Image 1: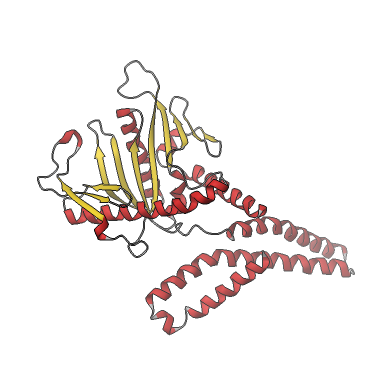
Image 2 (image 1 turned 120 degrees about the vertical axis):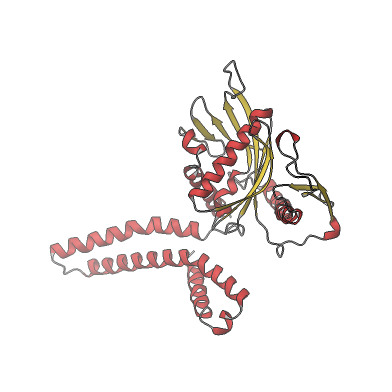
Length: 358
């Protein structure tokens, strides 16, 4: 581990020098890439410096104690410093192990979230809207920017489906574990007898992909236009501004009708399509690994039930890590950090375990 840390520290110093080079500063692409690498290495280097400082202080105190000749008060002080720094080394070492884990290359990306009502009809659509509200409130509380991409509302205020992007530093790293089936147990507003119903909603979290990252051949696309319609089928506008794009090789279909401009709808639809095809290619690669070794958390299988929201009991349970919290109102208002932090910790623990087995 320490050879790797020294390599990281040397690379950090090398980048620091390059960032002061006028030739690098004038090359926007190179400068941007180096700045990104520098930023990613900074927390590792700072923690390594902290570790080395504690180790040096512990070694110095140990040497003074071994040499002897200290009066009692000074000896007590040196012993205390030795023990304090020794105790600090183990947690610092664990933090460094986590920081050295391979980074998900998508962690810094913005995200596209798709929410679709599943089993449960109108109640599933209403819960889809509740989840949309939950994620947008979470995003707002973290200073992230939200952009609607597409929505298909129902007459009662639910969503058959809704797509939106969340832009902000580390958005994907925080939200990537939300992919999967979310189950709700509650008494629907439309239920007169007070019986608890169970419905499901599917959430897909995709990293937002730039056009330079994935190439899509225009001849592989079938683009159809149609009139946008809202709940109940009434026309939102009288022009064919809504866009449906089909990627013929994969059969992937995306729609966008949120904007009145056909061009804006096409841009948004292409944004979703790029992310979907990228994720499909990524999933093909990770499926090969997953078949050999099943990760505890993973990045979320959309067919797998990941969480249950039980309103009568006021609890939310994440089934992947066995976490149950009795604060459903706060969670539905976007207070997701406790769940997200627990999922990230579980993922890191599993990766450390796998690394130890190799």
